[in-house]
Length: 125
Image (cartoon, rainbow, N blue to C red; front, top):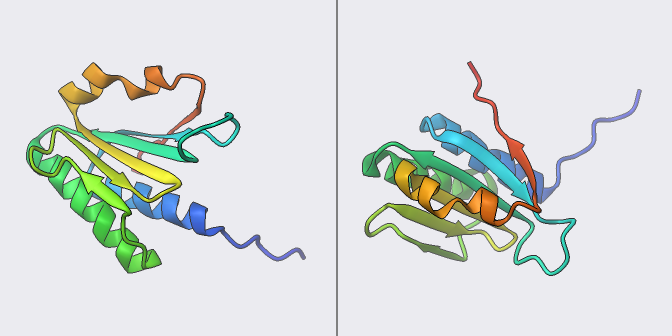
C-alpha cells in the first residue's frame, strides 16, 4: 500500500489561507496559479471578498493569525488595513487579495490575469 504523499509547504500555506477565509465566510474564493506562465511575479494569487469593512478586516486578520499558528510564517508585506477596501497580504510566492465586493468588481483581477489557471473554491456545507 503506497504511503500518502506529504503536502508541500506551499500546499499547506494555500490550504491554511483558504480555510481561514472560509472560516470568516469569505465570498467567492479563487486560486490563480501562475506557475505555468513565464516571468510571473509569484506562484499564486488567492482572492476573495467580503460584504463589509468589518468582514474584510476579519478575513485578513484570520488569514494572518491562522498562517502564523499553523506554519509559523509571517507576511513579507501587508497593506490596505487602513481603509479595508482591498487588503493585500504577501507571503512571497503566494499573494492574498481580500476585497470589499465593489472593489473586487472594479479591479477585476481575475480578468486582468486571465491567462492564469483559476480554481474556484466551493464552500463546505
